[in-house]
Image 1 (cartoon, rainbow, N blue to C red):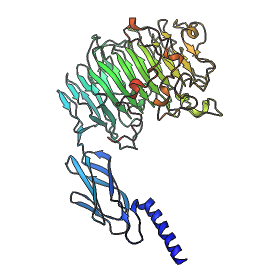
Image 2: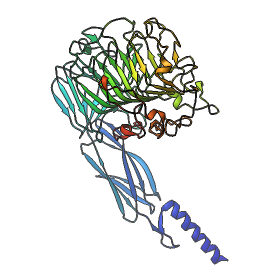
Image 3: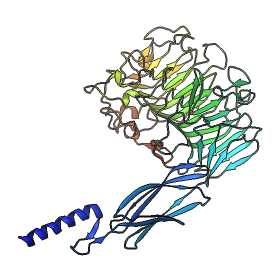
Image 4: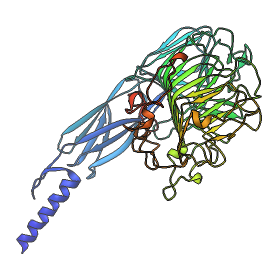
Length: 547
């Protein structure tokens, strides 16, 4: 019996050791333990100090972890450890080596990118390389006709304390030409896991194109004397190249109608290249245009706080292939929308009219992601501050074609709203055609439901010009969108944005080639494949990304 008990005990110990210590074999006298392992991640990167998170295991027992002359020793029977290591030197790489009690080692080398503080205005041509990171402290103006060139793969940090921003003045240029493999990233200076809305100011591009407010207009959110002004008469003005760029955790609502957005474009001319830009976790509008004629393609607004695409003061460019994804818990007290458009705040007839053309937009509003109540849409599952899918008001002549709005329109609001309590409704030249609307709590797809607004836009043909899902509050849309049967996952919007193979939205798009746009068979940002939204420059998890 003793021998049986002894064998059973040995077998039990072997089983436990295999789980806890990853034994390659087991015996009563001399177990053979696996070698040590080490994992190193940068968790904070600030001028003068880099903080690493070091995780080590040694089933045979830890002896020490060495980083150059710095050695952390272990005297107890410890087989694993996680700790932080602060580094204040100037090396570009550090090698961490763990040794177990049997003298076996494992190592990992971590690359260090030094941080260059940018705290003065840029007044002459300068280039930023991707072998370091750049920290914007306060409002940094690129002025005096200077050109700032940023290499692909460069990381620019907005200082959280001073709310750093980058403002490209009229006559100056930003050459931020990233690539799909090496996007340029503007993000928070906070470490992964600690980033939040409005950590820093944002990216502001100012040009010399026409707007309907004047030749020297102060941009919202900037108080700097003659700096921060936009406007002019040069519609083909060139403010540079902004492509394959991400802007994360920017946007500050300083006061009502005085905000810094994720990306702000004031009178930016058509000579500017602006495409493949993602704005995520913005503390105000993701994109806002004040006048100008710049065209844009392949834009993403992800989990923004206020509006996704805001157009004002005579913006008349073209935007094709864009997507927005709304967190049901997040919206601004001013009332958040996918589209918000005004000619100006007074609904004046100032020219040029706001007349931008948006085409092939897929907007998944908060009701696409909100929790369901017994399988039905729940108005209470969405922030009370969220309003409409599109608020087209105040004499704007905005156009929206071949687009999809799903999940916008809470009780008392609408997927499309053409009136406003002040400043009146949309201009008669506004156009909304070829669009698909679904998943709204609202009883109707639009307001007003018939007749002309006080600015002349007639909504009577809305139902024939567009497709409104019946019933409007239908939840299961899997016949149209891959897997969209219930509440979608806001953390993985790519999972449901693709059109189903036999989706009626995969065909029938209106031909827009006469407007200078790309013709597609499908409606929305992508067809029956993920397309450009699946490219490597896109990031839907910036909160946990290590930079």
